[in-house]
Structures are given as structure tokens and as C-alpha cells.
Length: 584
Image 1: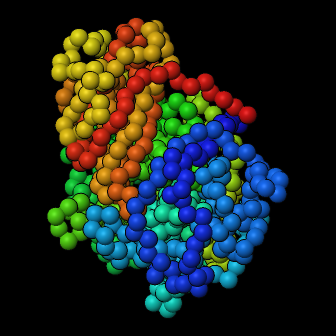
Image 2: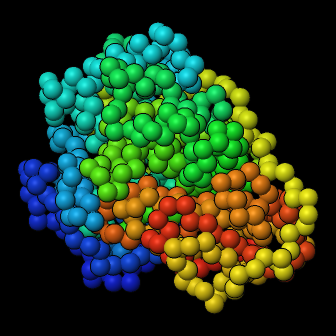
Image 3: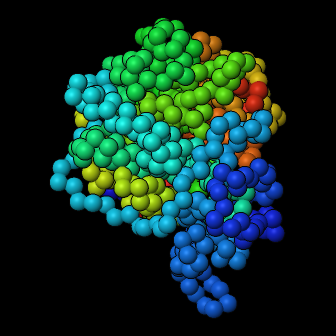
């Protein structure tokens, strides 16, 4: 299968601001190591790092230098100049875990999510599987499958009472997501620079490994190695409601902090934040959005997978289209939205630090994982499907397995879900060919009012709908993409905006039209920085054909804020040729 060579070398604008050593004792209690400082340095991502590192003693292997000395947690103390080269993101140092915290209040909000310490870490080796575990669609799961799932979660919750430090317990498993997403772990060798597994190419491999061990723990607790985690089939109209297995109040799968009003009326998931109350329109919007994020708007591998993220680079360089789209839509739809009430932090599903406390999270992410599989194996485009950069393949995570052993895994070892012993039941993919209908009347820039040049308005705040004129890079049937640069957001807020090209229709509840180009969305998360920046790219090639403007010199880009637009600033907007697709 074709693959992509993506890369990143870290260039620090202030190398003296980096700390290369730690004064914390190895025996310190993780929850006491609280890091609340802001970053004082900025990073950018550039070309690939060398495999070996030049030192005063000659060339040595980077991994040997980082991990081969100093004991299990000693890597951070061995990085003499961490800004001199890029490495894969290393597994976190649990002894230096601090509280995840909310930057809006400074409070921990019950988010002490540090994992238990361990005597040793081993490199995980996949066991041999005699048969694949087949993950079923949640709405089609048999009574036997549901009963096993409920029993397994019940036993996992019971571990919280028996031994709160048991890494297999329900809250300990939920806290894994919190620790990797909300500032608890610093990157090894880079003090006060978060490990963040969202909004980058780490998103898919981290969550695949996370679910792998979660599933095996559940199976172990009920003595059934064939146990398979259901997936919430929200990409099919039959699965576009909360699966019934999660809506029984006495079930261990129930969570009281879901948005019950939206779940029951209109009941159909709103992946796009459209606000429509028409179930048929919601289904049409959902299918349009999924088609866009899986097929239409994707120009390059990292458009889907997420932007490159290496050791020493700033977290959240940019989300992939699936993470940015339907993944975020489900988190927002299930999470309670009560900005002025007692649940103002959108617990549970509506905030990354608490999302793992809702059992529906794991079935949601099972479908997110399935979408990655479908994109690699089913979706036919000219975009290479795999990343071959060592900075991706050798990125590392730590998890506890079903035997309470702390293990190290790599991103590159989970490309094929079958090698991890599971696969997915096959269901229809109605979004796969859900291309919006072509516009009957050619859309012309001259017909759209209130548009100014992008250059005259930058940077652009989205407190209201914005229309800007953007020059195309070429005339004719060009293969082009729209790039939104330096998207700066308040990471404590739910963010969503949609992008349209030459759109004269102000009916913002309808996305199933040719002018829809794509979206940007963000779920609140805690970080050492309140503000984050990201870039996204949206392919325009088929859109040009659908609205018949391939020969125009300019287009009008309409950006519609859906949630907290006042907390979004876009630093750059341009249209460029789609990069040549590399394989190897």
C-alpha cells in the first residue's frame, strides 16, 4: 500500500528556556508533582531528523541515548540539548506526572489522573491470536454480547472500590485519557511542554492501542478472551442515535452526565453542530460531513491522519479530518452543555479530561478506529494511506495490560487491526458515495455581497459570519486546496465553524449542498497553554466541478461560526495547489 514520508525537525526560537533535567525524586507521589506554568518557548516543525545523534563521543543511536541509560525513568536527564534535533515523541515519565488542570480557573476539578507507578516497563509483544475478535455494531449487538459487556464494565467498576490503585479499574482506565490529553505529562526532555495525543498524527494510533488494552482487560475480567468491544455505528442512519445499551438507568453502561434533552429530542446525532431539529436534515448533514472528511476534502495523508508532531514540537499542530469532524461531533452531542450551571465544564463526554468516565466513549472511539480502517482499506483516492516517517512509527505510549504490567508500545505497530487480534463486522457505508448534488446555476463571485479580500481582514475573528475573497492559484480544472493557517482558539471552549465556497444560501442548517467545503471543531481540554494554534487544509477539486467555477480567478470563502466564534482567530487564508502525492 502506498505510504507517505512525513517529517519534523524541531527548531526552537528560545533554546535556553528548555530544561534538560529534573530535580524531582523518583519516589515522589505523582499527584504531588503539579505543573501549572505556561510555556515560554515556541516551536515549528520542519525537515526529518537524522537517525543518529552527533555527540562529543561520536554518533550514537538516539533511542540508546534516551532510553538505554539511567534506569526506567531516566531519559529526561540525558538530553543535553533537546532542541537540536527531532525525535519521535517518547513514552511519558510517570514519576513526573502532575495534575491536569483547567486554565480558566486554575482548579484541578477532580482531574488528578496520574497512573500508578510500576517497578518495570517492558516492550510489548503482540500475542498470537487463534481467531479474530469481531467487534459488533452496538445497535445490532446480541443479548449475549450486551450481557458480557455489562458484566465486564460492572467488574471493572468494582475494582475502583476494591483497590483504587488497580490500573485495570474503571477510573484508572478513564484517567489514561485525561493524563495524555490535559497537561499531566510533559514530553521527555522538554519541561512544561505537554504530551497531547489529539490534534496531530498521534490521534489514531494512541486511541487504537488504548482500546486494545481496554478490550483485553474487559475480556480478562470475565474470563473471555473472545470478548469484543461494540462500536457505535454513527456513520449509518440506523446507528445515528445513542445505542439503546447505554440508555438503561440501572445498567453499568449508563452515565448521568449525558445531555439527555438532545439524546431524546430529536434523538438523531448532530455531528455538525447544525442545530437542526429535523431528523431527516440531521441525517443528510451527517452523511455529507462524513463523506467530506473521509473523501472529498482530503488532499494528503496528514490531512486525514493529523499534522506531524515530534518531540519538542508544540502540541496540537492540527487535527485530521475525521478527528476534527465526526469524532468531535459525538463528544459535543453527548456531553452536557451547561456553561452557567453546575456542569459548566461539559462533563463527561464534552471535555477530554472526563470523557473516559462515560462508557459510551469507548464504543464511540471503537467506531473512530473503524473509520481509520475503512479509510485505509475501502476509500479509493489518490492519497497515500500510511505514514513511514520514523518520527511517526517510533512514537511511544505506555499502557497497563490485563496482567497489570506496564508496557511500552509504538505507533507504527498498530497499522493493521487484524494483527492486534480484532476486526469489525461489515455494515453498509451510505456516506461513501454521498457527494453533494451539483449546483444547477453557476455560482459567481460577483453575486455574493459583503466580501472583502482576505489580506485586508487578516487576522480574522469569527464573532460573526465572515466572507472573504481569496485568489485561486491557477485557472482551469486545477487540483487545489484551501488552507486555513494559525487557527488560534481558547482550548477551554467548544469550538466549531464551517467553511463554504461561493455560497449564496444563508440557510446554515443545511450542509448537504455543493458549496460545503469542510469544518473545524474542538472539544475543551486542559493544557499548560490556554491558547492553541492549528492549521487545516480542505481539498477543493471536486467542489470546483460541482459549482462550475473552475475557470474563475477568485472564490469567496464563507466561514460560519457554530460555537464560540468569538474565541477563534484565523491568521491566514490561501488557496494553493495540492501537494504531489509521495509514496514509498
